[in-house]
Image (cartoon, rainbow, N blue to C red; front, side, top):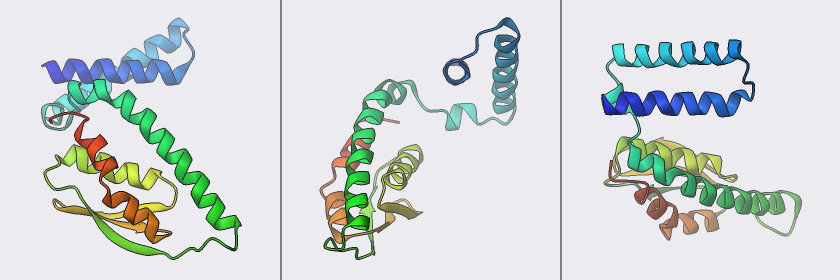
Amino acid sequence: MKPMLGLTATLLTFWLLLSGHYTMLLLSFGAVSVALVAWLLHRMDVVDHEAPHLDMGLRAPAYWLWLGGQILRSAWDTSRRIWSPKLPIHPITGRTSCEGFSPLKQVTYANSLTLTPGTLATSVDDTGIEVHALHPDTLRGLADGRMAAHIRRLGDH
């Protein structure tokens, strides 16, 4: 029951933040929408198994802030490589380890890689993520394990 309440609160908060309109009619539509989605997820029996856990949710804003900085840094580097004929672009694929990560953390890691300009997660399995990058330096940057360490700190689940 606790994951169901957490999910409902998260959905309601997310809806309120994205809506930006707080008239009685829209608030009631939002409440009905959230209740319907929560009920459907409960009926599908995925809430206890798939819902993000509270400890991960509490650490997520700090991770998003860090990831935002990485996205900006990578966007700057990618833009420079595209616009400057002196900077090389050598597409390459490689793997980064995600061994021991829960499925939720594997997806978070792969999505974080894809959100970062110049990289794309192409496949995910229990041992690692295959990554396409614009330059070998990007893969070397992943090999240092900083992003994986940030994912690990998100929580134990």
